[in-house]
Length: 89
Image (cartoon, rainbow, N blue to C red):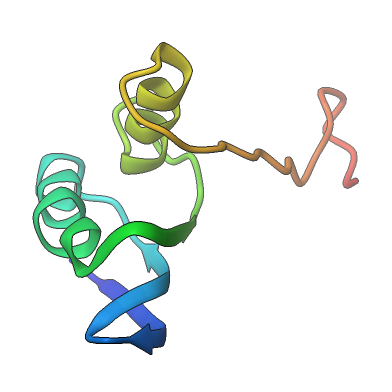
């Protein structure tokens, strides 16, 4: 499984911005994100996750669902590459 985290803007040993990209492995990736990435910051940290919606149970979809249900603070943005007719946007 490939994971990459770029830590930016460290102040007083806490990160104020975390940029992560990941290839999915569902449970392992979600556990890694929850246990290792999120604790790098504090209440003022912004975490930006970039990736593809590869599966209904992917990290991106899990976070989207948690945000929509109100279980997690955040903003989910989705930028499709093609429209419903299969044309590039």
